[in-house]
Structures are given as C-alpha cells and as structure tokens.
Image (cartoon, rainbow, N blue to C red; front, side, top):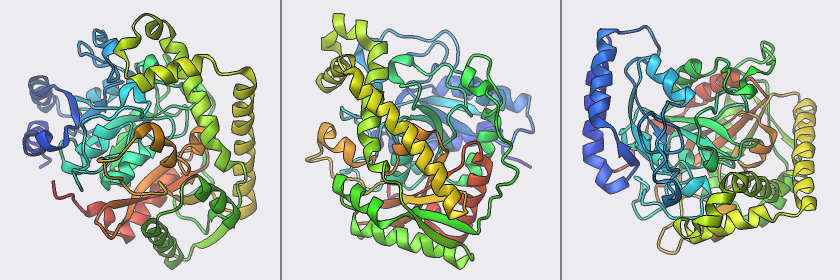
Amino acid sequence: MSETASDQLTRTLDAVARTEDKVHAYRHLLGQDARSSAAAADVNASASPVFGWPFAVKEVFDVANVQTSGGSRAYQDRVAAFDATVVGRLKAAGCTLLGTQVAHELTCGLDLPPTRNPWDLTCYPGGSSAGAGVSVAVGSARFALGTDAAGSVRIPAAMTGTTGLKPTWGLVSSHGVMREASAPSIDHVGIIARSAEEITKILSVLTSPDPWDAATLQARPTGHDVIGGADRIAVLGKETLKALSDINPLDPDIDSAFSQSCDVFRQADVEIVEVELPILPRAVDAIVTLFAAELSCANAQTVKHHRDLFAPAVADMIETGLAIPADQLKDAVKIRSSLRDELSAAFGASGGHYLLTPTTPRPAMPLANFDPTEELGTLIPFTCGFNLTGNPAISLPCGQTTGGLPIGLQIVGLHFTDAALLELAEEFQHRTHWHELRPPV
C-alpha cells in the first residue's frame, strides 16, 4: 500500500523541526495549511506519480494569500490572489505545499541570505534558489521549485549534493513568477530533487501548455530520434576551457571529479568528443547585461521612490541596468545568437546530442570572507551560457572535495529533449552513488 500524503508530510515536518534552525531554508512555513491539504488529498487519492510529495517553492512564485516579496523589503506587502500555474498543477496532482523558501533578494545574488549549506554550515549553499537545494538535501522538502537565470537552480544543486534541472526555455510555465524578480528571456522555472528519476515524475506534471504563458504554446520538436542513451557525448575543448579558467580557475577536486564522470560514460561504451565553443566565455558579460536590463525595467519606479528598501548592491544594479547603453545590449543579443549557432554546430560536428561540463568551477566557498558582489561571476561560467541559448541542462552530484563538499556535473541537451536528457542522467545515477549521500545536518 502506498504511503499517505499525511504520513509523508509528517516525516518531512520532522525534518523541518530537526534542521530548520540550522539551515534556514524557509521564508514562510505553511504547516497547518499543509496538514489540511494532505488530509484532503488522502480522501481523494489520485494515481499521480507524485501523489503526496511535500514540496516548497522559492519565494518568487505566487501562492494564494501568502506574501511573495522576492526576498525584498520593497515588496513586503505583496500578497498573491492566485497560485502560480506550476503551484496549482502540483497541488492538483496531490502534492502538498509546505512553504516558500529563502532566495537572494530579487534573485540577484548580491545580498547574503541566512540560508546555510548543510554539508558545512560555514559555507555558501549556492544561489539564488538557496532554500530549494538545502531543503531537499536535509529532507525538509521532497522536492522544490526555483528559478534559474544564470545557474540559480543548478548551482545550489551542485553545492548541496542534490539534482537540479533547468528545462528547455518555454517548456514549463512561468505564469505567476514575480516579474520584479525575473528576467523573462533568460529565466527558467527549475526543479531540485534527490534524483533525475524523481525530476522526471515531477516534470511530467508541469509541462502541458499554459494559455497564460505564450512561450509554452510554441511548436515543439518531438525529439523521438534522441534516446536517453548516447554513443557520443561532447566535452569542452582545451581552448574553451583555458578561456573559462581565465574567469575562474577550475578547482583541482572538481577537475578530477569531472574526469572520473567522463570515465563513467566511457565504461558505458560512450565516446567522449571535444568541441570548442569560442563564444561561451563571453556569456558571463552577456547574461549580466540582459539580467540587469530586464529585471531593472520591472523595478524602475519602485527603486526611484523607495531605494532605501533595497539592499544597496541590488539598488545599484537596478539603476545601472536602467542606464545600459544600446550598444551593450546589442552586443549581448549578438553573443546570445552566436552561442546558439556555435552550440548547434558543435552538436552536429560531434555527432552527439549532449555536452558535459562541470556545473561550477569551484566548490561552496566559506562565508567568512564571501562577498557576493565580487564572487557571483566566478560561479556561473559553465551554467549561464545555456540560459542564453535556452537548452535544457541538469546538474548531478558527481563527487566530493577533499574537505567533503559536493561537486556537480552538468549535462546539456538539445532543445525540447528534456525527457531524453533525464534518461541519460538517470543512467549516470544508476552507475554512481553520489546522489545517495546525505549531509551531516
């Protein structure tokens, strides 16, 4: 007999009680509402693959009658009237919403939230979907939804030893994501869970077209010619890696874990082929420009009249974004277009459908001397380019540093082949044990 929603919730609330005062994953815990929802779900039990799963969402998703401030005092009075599309779909599938979670202010990554890494409480948990990765790692949520404009789902997944998917842009509805905390052309609703197998089940509930989000209505390739297995997988060539290392050198432990991950695929009779993406190192500048420009437009009036309610670095970014020269924006758009072309050509030349990279060039850093305004750019060189292109990308646990911190492997796929990408990720996790490890907290 399958476990009831109420029993699953009780176990998850026990984890909240054990860990929340240490890791601070939640902004608003909705315990009583969650108990009522779980009890109602048990009365009307469904055959949903995610029935009863307790979940949480980053505090940028609208939840009816709950404050959604995007982590900013400037929007502390913002209360949604309706659930975001993804929240409503998960509830309808029998999932239990446990609460909303801590994020960097307006997802900018420029402030320092209270959330801590359960593998080492003195270290950064990743951002901006910090609460999502932490809660899944400690079991205070079965899964969590975040948003990813430069790596904000994949980076916390990598740093907390969890699995994080950024789906193809337009596959999952963003209706009900707080516009003031979003850069729509590069932002993706993403999922963090323990495994790719779990994400496959969650994604199946979220992917039907939404009339409230025009991007989900576009024609989609079927991807039937792309299977979960692979004969060839691409990795970045030496010239591209050298240029990326100029942004931030690749940590030796991460380099070693990545090499071992490639060996896992070789042992499955997969050929690893090098490809060069010369434009990829320029993606950091392009993503910063587009993020600042798009997010600033939504916050222009608020920062003009209530600047003191924003973190100083966030207010500075909004004002800078409003003054970005036209030539800089044109260059960012050109980089996006060129990278799409390069990636498509690289897939074609390699004869494969997937690209492997480390998720981050460095592991979780100590918070004692952490300055997010200086270090944010050092985390995103491998992730942000695929926000520009809109390709699906997943981060999987693939090792640990000598100090015991998790390391992430990123796999990038072709547009709208998310199911096949997840099959490949599942195969990797069937051959490895890293996703089964649990943090000390």
